[in-house]
Amino acid sequence: MANNSTSEVSHGQLPKTSSTCLTEGVTAVHDFEVANYRLLDGIGIGKHVSSSNFSVGGFEWFINFFPDGRMADYADYTSVFLDRVIQQNDTYNVRTKFTLNMLEKDGEAQLTKYNEINHVFSSAKSYWGYFRFVAKAKLKSSSQANNGFFIIRCVLTVIKEPCTEVKRNTVVVPQPNMQGQLCQMWKDGQGADVTFSVSGQLFKAHRCLLAARSLVFKAELFGPMKEKETQCIKIDDIDPKIFEALLHFIYTDSLLVNEHHREGLNGMCESKLSERIDVETVATTLVLAEQVQHHCKDLKEACVEFIAPRNVLQAVMATDGFEHLVASCPLLMKELLDMVSRGG
Image (cartoon, rainbow, N blue to C red):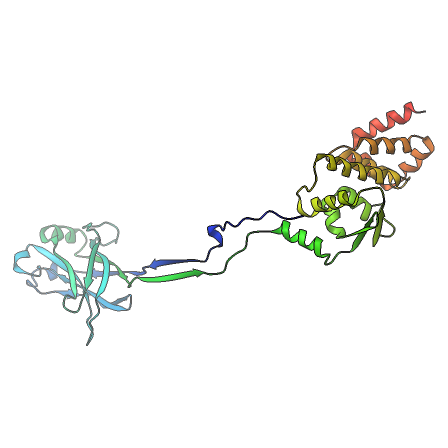
């Protein structure tokens, strides 16, 4: 009853480590609303107006808008810059992605469509943006249509420092081995609640497992024809090796015997059940003979022969097993009645 084994170890069983690089970002939007642009026009080159401070990613930021441009070279344009508030002894380098765009009064129509900027803000270079933001001629025309009102929208993402997490899986998960475990449980006899005495040799087993794996054992141990004494069941008409092979198949779902021995197992079961037929059990036994994987011809004939007398048939029809026979095997029921009728 040795089990096959292999020395190969799958990758799923080996201790395994893995690592993941995590980079997080914090994103926020700030709208800087500018009203009465016509009054700001002419403020002077290099003069600006500022938004309030807003916080993103643990740092303070603000927007500077230059109505007449930041430098003389850009006097025909407005300028805009995102600036970081630098605290005393601040040496942080802050990596960002951001956009600066101008929107009309309703906050939907965009006067500019600049792409996202990647920039690292440092204490030495705390601002970044556009010297040529919007042409003043274009802005004057738009501001007249919107009563000199527009919005500068900043969408800012502060990118945190990447970090690497290490995941370890040092627990080796064993391969499923229910077959081997059930076989070992059978060998050890732990929890066994029924014993078979086969030609003087004892075999311990578990009734629930036998019943779950075999309709024959289910009927014998729990059904209407169950053994009166199920602690030790005596069997004298089978070789102990064949019975051991039967139990091995039930517990492991693998054959320990050849085809000849398997036929012997089937014959043993049919013979034992045939000896125990009575009015209360015959209908249930007949269902078993018809429904098991390999139809039990001899057991079926024995049941029919037992039922054939009319007085026996009437008694069988009053049992619960007969109701089960009618419900589960209607074609067999018709065949049975035809045979009984021909038998007189």
